[in-house]
Each structure stands twice: as C-alpha cells, then as structure tokens.
Image (cartoon, rainbow, N blue to C red; front, side, top):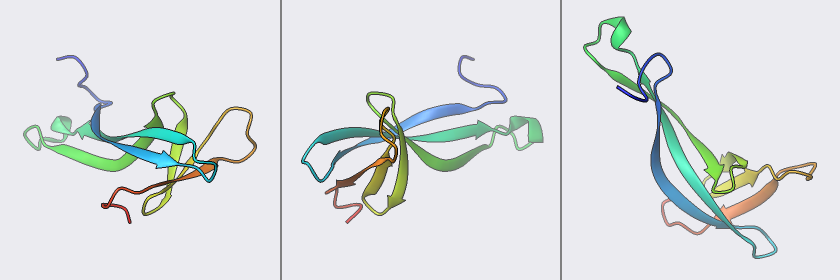
Length: 90
C-alpha cells in the first residue's frame, strides 16, 4: 500500500491561522507522523508521534507554547514568532 512501510505516514490533522506582531498572516498545517509498528507483532498497531507543523509555503514551524509558534523564514536569523487565536490554544 502506498505511503506505508518502515517510515510510516504523515497524516494531516488541522490548520491554524496565526499572525505575527506586524499583522502578517501565516497558515500553519499540523500533521502527526504515524508509525506502522506491524513488524513488532502488534497486529497492525500504530503509534502517534508528536505533532509537526509546516507553513503552507513549506517553512519549518516550531511550537513554542499554547497558541505560539516560531516560523523559520529564509533570510531571517531567528524564527518569526506568531500567535493563533484558536480557542483550543488560548
């Protein structure tokens, strides 16, 4: 089956809309890496790793805290800190 194997799959979970202190909008997609541990004789059990984040532009994103992220923008020394107003995070 495509997308399965030792590496597992990256499953899309949700999208966060976040803003920097200049009011610029960042669209951040959240994924979970799902590892296929069938080889460990768990009958096809899966293991959910920690969530990973990427902007729609493909930039790396690190979660700093609830509703707070750091986006690695090319040409910037440090990541750009952005915040979401999603009630799940505030």
